[in-house]
Length: 159
Image (cartoon, rainbow, N blue to C red):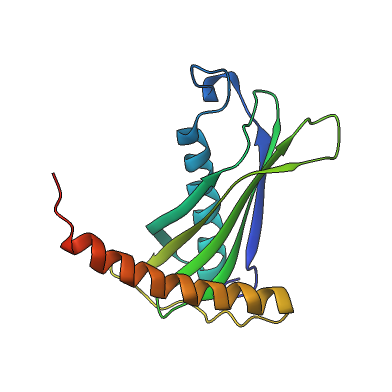
């Protein structure tokens, strides 16, 4: 039911196919997991098919190793008319223990679309807890910073 589940956690084991030449899970695999969790969260909130409009601020803080249990948590932090801003955290650790360390975090914006691929309205998310209010305020500040960055990027010459 749309508008009721504002977060999701995907859990799985990091596999040998996810490893880079340095023996750790490569960033592309982590970014794929982030996109999957973002989609699941946004589709669950909106009740609609969603597409990724933006992924940014990604920070790789610690490595993930083959055999680690990986938890990718996506949570709605702001909704626009057709978009959902999601805070994403990736944590990992030894599956034999309960300790998980933060490995990656970022912001993802998903847009709900109709059968023709046009943006369609989503239920409004209203923060309740102090943490949710803080996350919403952060999302609004980041929106403003992205506008400024976009302006600067447009004036910057590209190759």
